[in-house]
Amino acid sequence: MGVIGLEIKSVKELFSGRHFDREIIILCVRWYLHYKLSLRDLVEMMAERGLQLAHTTIMRWVQRYVPEFEKRWVRYMRRSGRSWRVDETYLKVRGRWVYLYRGVDRDGNTVDFRLSPKRDVAAAKAFFRKALRTQGRAPVSITLDGYAASHRAVREMPTENNAWKQSKLRSSKYLNNLIEQDHRGIKFRTRPMLGFKNYDCAATTIASIELLRRIGKNQFSLRPLRVKDQTAPTIWNAVLAA
Image (tube, rainbow, N blue to C red):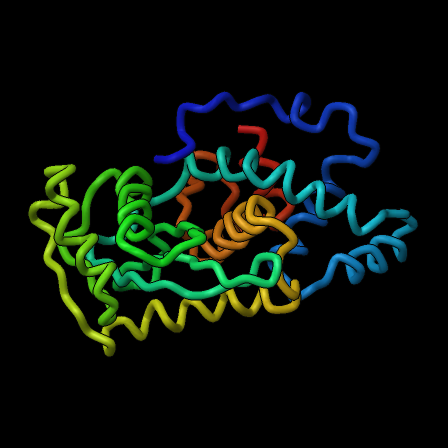
């Protein structure tokens, strides 16, 4: 899976030198990405707890820690099913539209995602390559809407990797309602953000929202950590410390 194999620092190293305790950092990042809160909402909420934060501090935490959080969570990720529904949705970065490629399986579990400045054959192929790395296997079927570039990308994938040779391509707007519905969860969280300042910031923030949505969909097998029925902070601390 994409980030497996990268160096994982200890929790102590990860939060070393920070002015605020790691519980506060994790809480702010998690709440910002999960709930329909602005950065300034969080600043006010922390102020009620006697903590003086700047909204830019929380945003820096998001950009700094999300890749580290993702590395730790992905170790426990369950593979999705092999019937994929793939579609693109739109987001604004510096006032310009960019494209978020996303896939879910027949049960609505997230397969993968990829932000792209373009919507073309190359962008679709890049998404499928990333999804294959994440899942470790190609799908039995891929359902798309009628956009020609994505269809061409699927047809050409077997020429670069034999794993795609048995994947069946389908086109069905009805079957793709599932992924279109799933897009709403991303839009629900990004809409209050009123666009992103730069592409890297957008990509990291989207990755973190997708992580929180996967957690909400129970796409991680945490049995080895023995955290069943525990609170979210306890679960997060166990995953980060493992």
